[in-house]
Structures are given as C-alpha cells and as structure tokens.
Length: 170
Image 1 (spheres, rainbow, N blue to C red):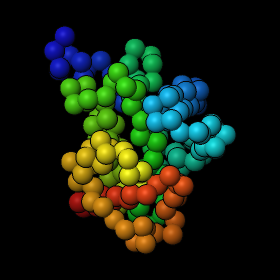
Image 2 (image 1 turned 120 degrees about the vertical axis):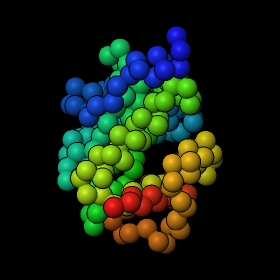
Image 3 (image 1 turned 30 degrees about the vertical axis):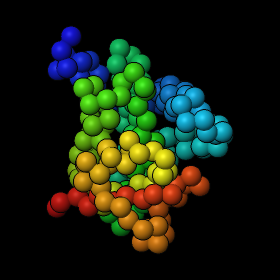
C-alpha cells in the first residue's frame, strides 16, 4: 500500500450522537494510557454532551473514521466575537505520523469549517510536555500567545500551560 492509498482509507465527518462512546473511549485511552493522566469521562462533561457543548453557533466536532472505527477527533467551541477554541484533538497511535495524514486532515477540515462559519481567530491550550503537538501547530501557522492575552471567554483547562493562536486570513 502506498502513502497515498493509506491516506485514502479514512474520512472526516461531523460527530453524531452514536459516536459518543467511541469518541470518549479513544480520548480516554490516549489521555490515561499514553500520557498517564488521572482523568475520567466525568472530569470531561463536554464529552457527554458533544452536540450542545461544541456543535452550536460556529462550533464543530469532527471525527476521522476508518472502516467504521473512530481514529481521530478535533473540536472547536465557539467562544464568541469570531473566535473559536480548538479542543479534543486526539489521533489513535496507529494513525499518527505524516504518511497517514489524519491529524492534518482533521485540522484542515476544522479550519475550513471555521472560515465558512465566520471564525477568524482560533485559540488553543496545551501542556508544555506535548512537544510534538507544539511542532504540529507551529507548522500550521499557530503562534504562541501569552495566557494574559487570551479572551475571558477562552475555556482554560487546568493542564494548559502553553497557548497558541491562528489568525485566519479573511
């Protein structure tokens, strides 16, 4: 199978209510299994109501699906004033890496959706030790922003210590 064939076997779509358990399972397996975080589904109430938390206003929750299995997620919460907060970007370990293209496809689809819905500014928070994520965001035009420069509506997580911003061209 060539790299091109590999990237063609998944697709990006909006999350639907039937995806909730698979999305939660994927996210928790990465958070707890790979990163050793002591976090539960109850600690993340947004996962129990994806539609109302993310898919309102200009928000979105997208999944990458391969052969009926959720292999990646990305979300954006509409925080008002033409701004969105990028959250819940997770890709199953077997689907990571440049030759697979899942993370890039998820981000590209979210940015396209943001532009279409009038979002001009995407903000995100992450932890210092997620260096691969930092490189990924920086390669995609995100720039570091000081925590003090975040709008009051930005939903900060306790673990977030590093913040990025992407201003979308109009």
